[in-house]
Amino acid sequence: KLTQVLESNNQNLDAKINKLTQVLESTNQNIDTKISTMNQKLVAQDKMRRLEWALQNIDLVENFHYNADGTYYFAHQLIAGCLISFRQNRGYYLPVNADYCQETDACKKKQFKKE
Image (cartoon, rainbow, N blue to C red; front, side, top):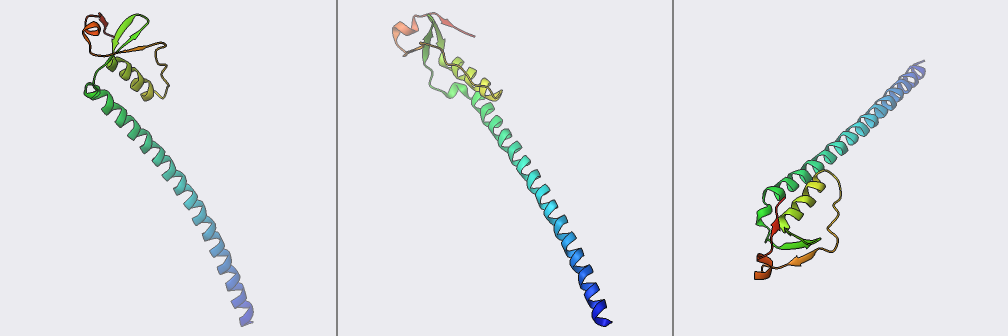
């Protein structure tokens, strides 16, 4: 009779251990999912923080000019457009046939378009 009681207690204990193991595994999966979601949010926030820094410090870029369709632009306008598009999770099409214009007298005499 004692053997039956012990065996019954062992079965009950095994069932409780199995149930507890299932609960812990489920909890671990939920925690892993939440951590993954938090990591994704942190990565996105870090990306936005870096893009905002770049936009605020765009004047640190050595300026050059470019010619697109006969109109001369400052490079920071192109860079700002790219950064704003990246901030909105979009791409940016670079101007077709844009020519680099160095800081020369001929380039300085051109009329620049400010956007």
